[in-house]
Image 1 (tube, rainbow, N blue to C red):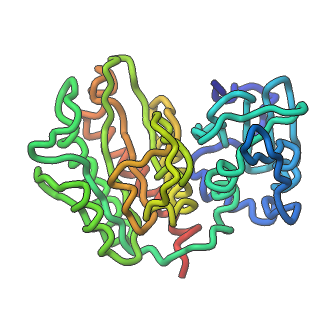
Image 2 (image 1 turned 90 degrees about the vertical axis):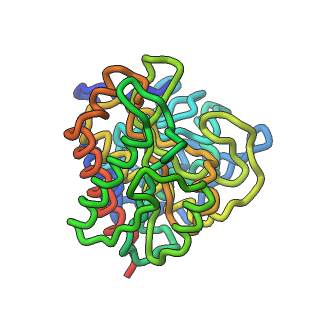
Length: 335
């Protein structure tokens, strides 16, 4: 597993995660393509791009291969791969890949689908072709009524999700957004009803808020999901799907939104970084707009449950999510 970069002089570079999306976007011409196209390498039946080609294409100032590690640096971005790992780090934020970093002929290889569907939208968000005016945020507190979600140490997921969702609404409205909520009380909606509700709202993005659970009481941390691209498996397992879902039309925006929210949350609260992940949750598959599912911690972990049960923690998460959406709007909001 690739670990977060250690804090020592060798990595003396700006790695602030306050607003990763807007940070890398600000690089502007520094991350304009240095070459006309990627040089595709075929390896074991899959298409990849080499570490050297990534370095040249994105015009990183330095590229440092060291054993299995590959480190790319510019003034605003620090990216690290590790051969054999299925995650990488950009500015100390964890991204889970669809396919492990491969090795051939001494080169580290990243799959084309990971480069196209994950790395490129993060490094060059201004190059995302499909942009739209964003005036509204659909906030979707998970579960409700008889569907309690995870049973935690101090309460049920459905209540925490609603509590967080209402706080996000307040923060977003203070920032000038219109907010539509799938539920504002302890009521139940099917996943299909949530999707149908969201798809009727124009000029909007969709943020579903949840809290996590595990049979292991030690499991903790924050993770953020975007829809898995066509032809890939979900991060948490399952077979690769060749099906194209409605939400896949917004793959680039989905990962950009997930990056903005996840990076801001990791900066604002003290939590384990479980990474930006991919899944085919029903609530994401049918969405016709940029959409993510945010997991704000584990209600089954005693220490984390106490934080989740506190107003201070939920307030901080709500502010982080809202500030991240402001950043996303600035870069991808269109006109």
